[in-house]
Length: 270
Length: 260
Image 1: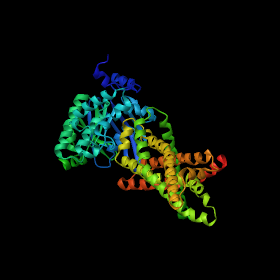
Image 2: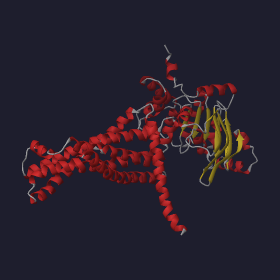
Image 3: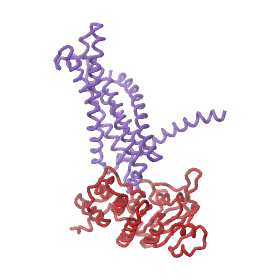
Image 4: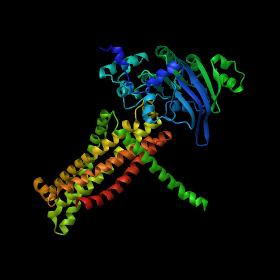
C-alpha cells in the first residue's frame, strides 16, 4: 500500500520529468534566459536580457515601472512569447513549445500574481484545489487534506469556505501563494508579493516566502519594488534598466556599486 | 486621397482582424473541447446559471407575447370573419418565429452581457492568465463550458417561452370567448406537422452557439480595465443580437427549403 504522503504528492508523470532529472545531473540552471528581446509596438521592453537562476536560489528582479519585470515572468511561464532569444527550464528550451508541452512545463511552476488573481467564483478551498483536481490523481479526501495542509502553511486554514471577495489583500496573497505551491513546483515566480500591503503584512509575507523556500528548495524569481523585501528574501538581485540587466549580485554588492542609476535607485527607497 | 483610403481601410482592416481573431478563438475552443478532462462540474454550473436563471424572464416574456398576440390578432381576424383561426394564428406565430427569436434576444441580453462582463473582469484581474499559468486551458474551462451550456439551454428555454405564450394566449382568448384548452390546442395545431415544431425550436441551438461564442470571445479579449469590461459587456450584447437576427433570416430560409 502506498504511504499517504507519497499519494498526496503524486502528480501526472506524463510531463517532461526526464528533462528535469537530466538537468539535475548536468547541473543546468533551473531557469536560463539568454538574449531575450520583447517589444510591444515601438516600445522595446527587453533588449537582449540574460539571467540564470539555480535550483534552491532566489533571485529578486528590481527596476523602474515599465522596465519589463512582470513581462519577464510571463515569458518564463509562457503567457507571452519573446520576439527572439532563449528560455530554458531545467535545460529544456520552452520558447517554441506547443501548448500541450508548455502545460506540462507549467505544472512544475507556481505563479503568484500581483493581485493574487484568485478565481472569484470559487471558495478559498476550491481555489487551492484547482490545480490538484486537474493535474493529480488524488481522491477528494486526499485533495482536501492537501489543501488544508497548504492553507495551514500560509496561516489560512480557518478560511476554507470564504470567497476571495471576503479576504483582505494580504490574505488573498497568502491563498495565492498556497495555490502556487499546490503541485509542489520546482520553480516559483512571484510578481510583487508585497505590493499594496502595509509594512507589517509585507514583513509577514516575506517571512512566509523565506519559510516556504527552506521547506521546498525551489528556484524562485521575485519581481518587486520593495527593497527591504528583496534584501530579506533574495540570495541575489538583478536590476533591470533599459531592457537589460544593469547589475547583478548580492544586496551588499549593489550598495557598493559606483553606478549613478544603481545608487539613485537604492537611495530612493532606503 | 490618402486620408480617404485610410478612413475606409482602417475600419475594414479592424473588421477583418476581428473575424480572423474569432476564427482563431473558435479553433482553440474546438481543439480544447475534445481533450480530457471534460469539466463536467463547471458545465453543470453554467447550465444552471444560463438555463434555470434565464427561465423566469423568458417564460414571462413568452406569456406577454401570448397575451398581446391573442388581443391584437382577435380584432383583425374578427374583421375578416376568420375568428376560428385565432388559436392557429397564436400557436403558429409563437412556435415558428416569436418564441425562438424572442428567446434568442432575451438570452443575448441576460447571458451575453453576463458572459462578456464576467470573462472581461477575469481577464483584467489576471484570473484567465492564472488559469493558463496553472496548465489548464481557459478555452475549455471558461469558453467551451459556457458555449455548450448556451447551445443546450436555448432550445429548452424556447420550449418554455412557447409553452407559456400558448398558455397565456389561451387564457387571454378564453377571457373574451371561453374555449377549452384541448380545443384551443387542437385548432392551433391543425395542419401542422412535427417538423413545424422541431426545426424552429432547434434552430435556437445555433443562437446559443452565437451567444456563447461571441460573449466568451469579447470577454476574453478585454483590454483597458473596468471601462474595457463595460465595453465587452455591451459589445457582447450588440454583436450577438446582430448575429442572432442575421442567423434567423438565414435559418428560416434553410428551414423553408429543407423542411417545408
